[in-house]
Length: 164
Image 1 (cartoon, helix red, strand yellow):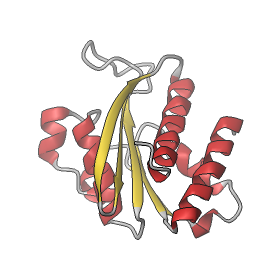
Image 2: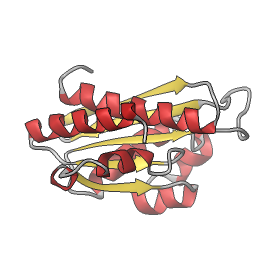
Image 3: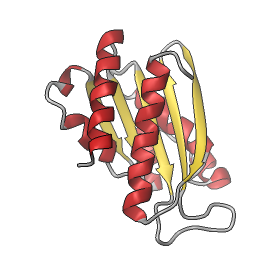
C-alpha cells in the first residue's frame, strides 16, 4: 500500500481517537481502498466501525438508503448521491462521522459532462452540517482511485481538526 495512504490513515486514526469518534465509510469507485488503508493500522478497531462498498446503484439504495429518484435525476456520480451515501452510512452505523466516494475511475464510463476522473465526495457528522465536493483527477484507473482515497481521508482529517 502507498505510504501516503498509510500515513493519512494513521493521522486519521489519531484525530478520531482525540475526538472519541468512530468512523464509517461509504465507498463506490474506490471499492474499499480507504477501509483497507484504515484496517492496515494496528488498533483501528477502536476507531473504525464499518465500511460500505456500494458499487451498484441497487447497493446504494439497499445499504445506504440513497433515493432511486436521486440516482435517476442526478446519477450515481453526483454530489447529491455522495451526500445521501454519507448520511446513509451515518444512519446505518454506530459512527459519529462518515465519508463517501462515488466517481468514474475509468478507463471507460466518462461523458462530456462527467469525464473519467470525476469523483464526488461527502462528509457527514453528528450534530454538524454535511459537506460535499467534486474533484477531477487525472491518470489511470488505479491513480484516480488512489487520489480519491487520499482526498476523502484529507477531508476527514480536516473536518476533525476544525478545518472545513
